[in-house]
Length: 249
Image (cartoon, rainbow, N blue to C red):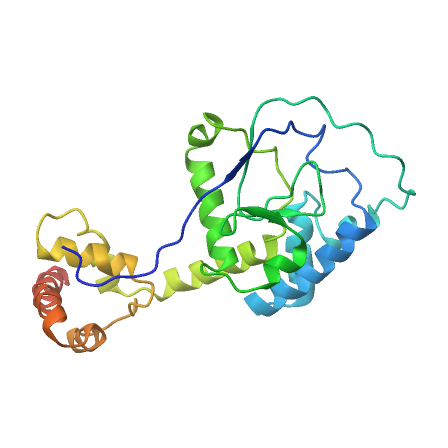
């Protein structure tokens, strides 16, 4: 039985029949990529509340450079030439949220809208925050790459326009983890129980608004509220708190 609902991120990818380019990105970034990265660094600095130079270094490192200075100095100022023919297809491709399109570097895959959009598309609000969705997709891919390769291969190290949002989400997750209190850590261990406390634990860990630093039963009860739909949850919470207090030395 689920007592209360929380938001959950969706993880999905896009499969296309296109083959990969010869490399995931040029060794020397183009002026356009550097300019886009400069804007992304400003977004990251604002979202993560960190100095701009730190955000720039994080963006540069996401492209394989040691710092922003190395990234900016490596720019390729050669005039654009006639593009080479696309390589022969090598099987279906799988894209994650924010991945750059191999055939058209000007667009990126949006998993929520299921299409490739230009950078300004990702400036608009979506149902699931971009950083949360992109990071969840990457983590799932890293845990079980075989789940993806059976139906399509993700391009090798594809540039992702949401890298600033991903870095900000990592920092936010680290802050949430540091803010977790003893009860929240204890209840996480009860999720597999086949009883009301286990049901409560499952819902608590899914609810991103639950006060993770809760220090008292009163505070937790106030969050759950009152009414017919909450009575069972409050009852389970009281049982859980009694068990939790019994473990505290």
